[in-house]
Each structure stands twice: as structure tokens, then as C-alpha cells.
Length: 285
Image 1 (cartoon, one colour):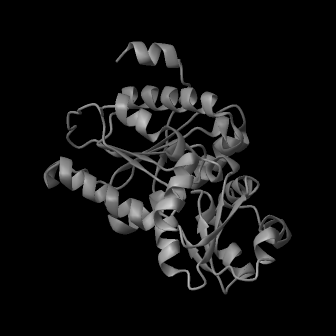
Image 2 (cartoon, one colour):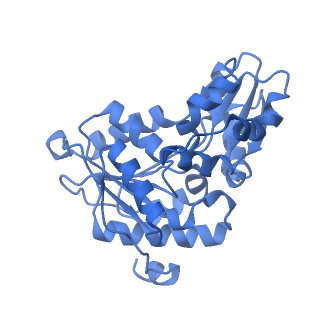
Image 3 (cartoon, one colour):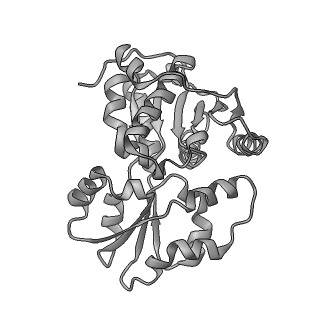
């Protein structure tokens, strides 16, 4: 059963991702509620998650979030990572005393708008093979052909774009090649929060496709959860926020995070090094 939680007055919303891809969710939250105070956690030391072992990821995610929430309480947690949400969402809800909003592939909207009943799921290799993803397709797209493509190489490209580096069309073309050859495809689900950061480049390669992501839906759901659990005077309306990150070893990583944070009205904060193991986490509940 999910744990009960105590509302924390004026605590910011915490957005979590393996790297900076979750800033696409921050962007959607900013659009929906410009004054919402947001803290951001990037586990960039372990990015990308999509190629990691499931058991290792479960321990890692629980450890990082438990440590961060102990330092900075939150009114809600947005798990802005499809790989993490499709793996550990229910475990987090069972042990963390905070409302949690997951980000999962936008299978239902894609099925609703695909005229040819054929769409692609562009995501990390981990997300496309999850039972959670299988269940979404069975529930909402059983009458569609769903082409799954793991494209972990798009994650560093999105991070590079955020750091100000140009993106070569050839690199994107190589990733999309299996989809570009499909004759009936008309819609693509961006099933990783990094991928909407490349939307302008991706759509220029295939302008005839419809591109779908979960950002707007996650933002709406987050505001619904805040309204459900908190009175409006308790909801923080200060804009701003801070960024925590797990890799501070290279000046490049710090500079990249600082640039990204500035672009999204967040402020660089001290680094976070998780010290809580899965065993000690479980023993504390």
C-alpha cells in the first residue's frame, strides 16, 4: 500500500531525471504555471539510465531520491524519466512520503491521432522492453502497429544541444533510419524526456510525422495533484528553484548544468552524492 504523507507548506516541486532531459518537463511546468517553484535533481553521474541494469537502477534511484528529499523536502515529486518511471514508480510510492507523478510514453494520445493506425515509440532500449510499456500498448493501442526503436544515442545529443553544441543532421538521421524506411508510419512518440529537446531537429527530418510527448499531460497532472493535496496558499509561487547533481568531477559537467539551469530559471546548487544503500533505505521504513 502507498505510504501516507504529510503536506509540507511552501515546499517546491522536485523534478528528477538521469540528466538534463527532464528540463523538457520543467519547460512544460513553467508554461502551465510560470510562478511554480521547482527544484531539479540530475543524476548525471549515472546518465544515461537506458543502458543500465534494472536491479542497479532501482537501488540507485531510491538512494538518490531518498538522500535528496532528506535535504530538501518537496510538495510533489515528478519522476521526469521514462526509464525510471516504467521501472520503479510503484516502489517509490510505497516508500516515499510525497505525492509522485510519473512520466510514461504517450501511447494513448498517439493511438488517438494516428490516421494510419501505425506509430513509433522512440525511447531508450530499457523503456521499449519494459512490461509497463507492453501494458500501455495493449490497453490503448491494441489496434495499432507500434514500431519500437531504442535510441540511447539521442540522449548525449540532447545534452550536447543544451550545452550549446551544434547537432549534425547526419547523427539524427542515423538514429531515425529504421523509422524513415517505414511506409505507413505517421506519428512518433518521444518516449524519453531528453528527446523533446531535439524536437526542432527531429521534425525537420520528417515534417510529415506527428510528434507526441508527455510534457503537457505531466504538467496538468502535477497541478491537479498539488490542488488535491494542498490549499492554494500553500502551493509555492516563487518561480526560481535549485539544481542538484551527482557529477561534479569535470568542469565541463558543471558548466553545462549551470548553462541549462540559467536557461530554465533555476540556480546551480551544491552537488549531491548518494550515501544511502538499498538495504539501509528499506530498514528505515
